Amino acid sequence: MASKNKNNNKKPLSFRQSVDRMVDRALKVLDIDPGTAAAIKSCNAVLQVSFPVMIRGKVQVFRGWRALHSSHRLPAKGGIRYAAMVDQDEVEALAALMTYKCALVDVPFGGSKGGLIIEPEKYTRDELQLITRRFTLELARKGFLNPATNVPAPDMGTGQREMAWIADTYKHLFPEDINHMACVTGKPVQHGGIRGRTEATGRGVQYALQEFFRHPGIVKQAGMSGGLDGKRVIIQGLGNVGYHAAKFLSEQDGVKVIAIIERTGAVIDKNGLNVEDVFRYIVNKQSVKAFPGAEYIEDGKSVLEMPCDVLIPACLEAQITEENAPRIQAKLIAEAANGPVTFAADEILRQRKIVVLPDAYVNAGGVIVSYFEWIRNLSHIRFGRMQRRYDELRGQQYVALLEEHAGVKIPEKIRDSLLGGADEVDLVRSGLEDAMRTGFQEIYQNYMDNEDISDLRTAAFVVAVRKISRSYLDLGVY
Image (tube, rainbow, N blue to C red):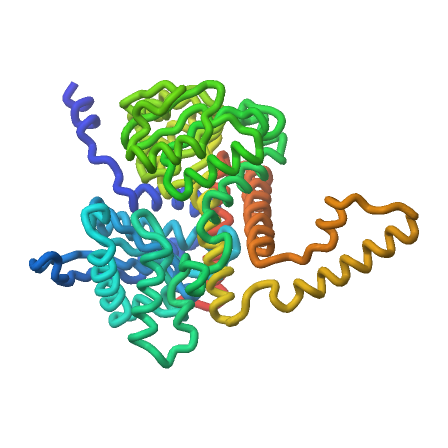
């Protein structure tokens, strides 16, 4: 009995430890030299800052971090999170995930992440601007913000507005840097951003699931068949990622979003919820309670255990734990959030043969499009500007040739699609889809080819770690 109590009181793994344990599985498969493995897993540097800001006549001190996990590729990339629960362990874990995520989808960045302990909703717009600009000053002065070495992006609690403030502050600190716009991504389009970045992570989730369902073998292993059409989906979190993923999947792929879980509870409709209606209701009411035509459950987290085809946690880390993992009834879990499944829970899900599409892959859409934005800022030209009209002219020639030889008029709808040149957002979506499709194909190939790999998460980390280790071995560790 004493032994049992001791086991029950065992301290759970931290977020950073959980990520490292998952990576250890891949390291074991690859049989990498222990020294190189330690170098890959270690966090290169962590900056902790504390700074005062005058708020409503009183001085408040704010504390934040910027973790640099790996600089094997530059710049290091990763978001800035504004939340009350931010701590160094979380920032280091997220920075590590960024390293593996970038390697997995062939984005030539290292991994970094930032966080500030703050509850944004308690401050006015002007107060948040003062705080953000001061945080930017601390990061830039200490070398943790630069277009060539460390480039932030939005994360929970931040968005386009905060990124614009960061870019403007950096510009005033370094007016001679003509690439100042590239110091941060996720900016408004009119301030150096790129079309398609706002919804990029959610669209990446859509592309990831589309590609998953193009592989009948793994679909069958998950206990399903066919494509996405008609699949029952549960979404946890209707923030930027969850909203766009749910909207695109329901409107374009025909899935039924049977439940949406928010911090105020969950709404359920077995016939399918209208995602846009639920989102607008939350914006107006700040809650999902009493949403018309749906069942409301106050204990939203319990809805994670409802039967469904696809469960998409798009909220926070550690939502599926050792406690509730034995009761999860989803056939497929697509991790749209960072770290929603703990290591202990992942072990249980593996034993239960529940297929998990890992966060290092599913959540990669944001950094892929951030890469495109960074390139755009460095090149100082909008994508498509030089070739769009040329493509239209070639299209006109093809249409004329077809109509002349076929002797028929091409229908207007087909004609328009042939004549139109690719705009920036078309190119962004094309690049994002390509990266997500090839990313899954590489994961799946490793999963199928290596009998020591029993799940997609391990396969994903094997792909990422192999690429990172190749950099260390090719260039040397010094």
